[in-house]
Image 1 (tube, rainbow, N blue to C red):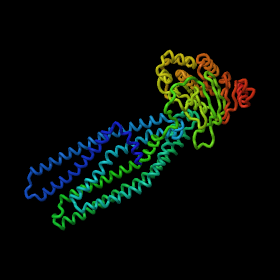
Image 2: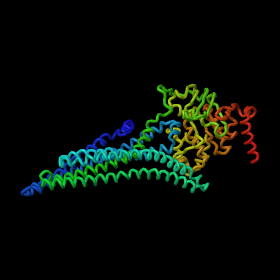
Image 3: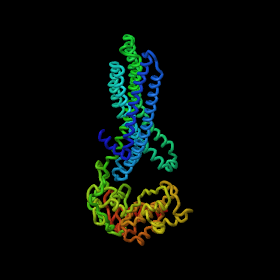
Image 4: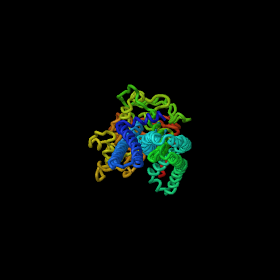
Length: 584
């Protein structure tokens, strides 16, 4: 826990002054509030015992009480202002640190947490920790201070009678301890269910068109209802246990007040007010109320801290996670060419995985070559190309680009020279120009048009009313799948990479457009190494060489004609596609 608090305390940077002044003014407010009952008790004793009441003396007490009340109010306001600034700043820094940490993650790290879990940690968990931080620098400071000062003043005013309040503190502490032991495991499980709930929502919204086309709204609603119901049951169990806190507190307060009233009244009557006066009695009751009400505050802090502890643990888990892919100490800053070499490469996605995704890959691709990759679903085609730009690292063996191990390159340098157009194309909300300039922020309008012509995208972009200033909705929902693919290809070309990888990224365009794109590549970027993953033989048949993958291993390498004669898998795929096309 200490390590976790130290890690989170780093997010206070920039708001240290506010974090200090909030408890500082709270402490002043507590001191003043403890002085007020003492002055009031003195006034009561004066009114009772003075032979002659003087208005000047009463006015002096009155003015002092008003000044103390204003001072207490001012301290409270200042503390609240500093607390709000500090807690919001803390949350901002925490989100910033989490977001930037996730940006440095490798795919392996993201796979470990899952997208929905990371979203929950950046939102719900940060809010919980922010609330706890707010309580920590205000109420968690006020309550102990008030307990200490009120107890001291209670002993000054009531002597041994104040021991009644002291006796209740360990009893309450023991009750809170047992409550905490019960609810912490429940909260731990509940926050995992938050991840499941967010995953259900995210999946449903992203696939809403599929849900509606298959009329599966009722099924998805029922699935969400189940996830939400499981989460509600966990929180209901936790809240029922935490609800026991209030009865314990009420019993303690009522018991202590009865005991104080009983013994104090007996003492006043038996001594005629000589050993214990009515002013002391009123002061003792006031301090008792302060002590017990702040015990209630501490219990509220305890509840909040209990809930936020699991959130804090989940946040620190993300902050402490080290990326599996890091820059070397003295990175290579230049990629000489587009040569690619796989030397005895094997790969699996997790250390716990029993089977390799890729095994014994030995491959040499010369700079400027066009390479096709064919293979069935699950043959690890995408896994192979993801190691070129170091999205994953090889478990065994070495991947080289330009004759240098990819692990020796500066990551940004390597990835700027390897452009990947993924099977699942992603466009961001903004204009077509803004999306294209992800490839090169400084690209001119003429360069945008040039790469769009290479990707056969200019023909439809120029027909839009606003042309290249057309606004793209989030995820590219207002353009077709084929248009989206061509824009993503143009964006990749704008990087002027030494290696261009198309991961089944022309699957949504017709064969004529596919052929036009490949011809443009041959003519316009002959020096760029081009790797084309495809399901259609027609997309790779004119490649310099074609790689056939099967079960994570290379089953054959050669030209289209060579593989038709030597590779059974390639010939079977070719014949099935040719037969299907002729029948159609």
